[in-house]
Length: 196
Image (cartoon, rainbow, N blue to C red; front, side, top):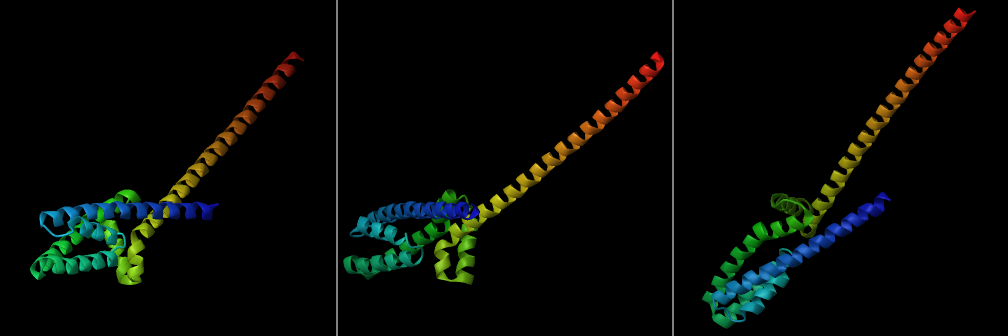
């Protein structure tokens, strides 16, 4: 049924979205860990993984994990290092939010990064923070349903055209048969008449 097919499609899209978020989380963890190691931050890898895990919860998770990294760095390396790491973390987070995350999700959901960013902005502006988390999969589902509707309509039109062509051929064949029958009947009638 249509409902079953659509529910299956929604399920597939959300599974792909979660998978994409996990890939993005791993990428973020690696980038942050390497950056923290280069900057000689204590517990660099652990803090990088913390940001990667926080990144699985869009925006709020990243914000909380960066705040924790900032506080831990203050206690382990002092305020100047903490502030420097905070600035670096915000820059890296923006690179992820604007480039890496839309690209990874876009590849999984077959959407372009600008469409994902636009969906997130519109979702956040009109429907609140909850929709921001699922804006990309919602757009992917809508796109898929619209494409399917257009394809079904196109297929229906093709079937109608084929049906009309067959009907036309059938009518023509009937007309030809009638003409042929009429011609043969007249010919036979004339031959019979001539014999008499």
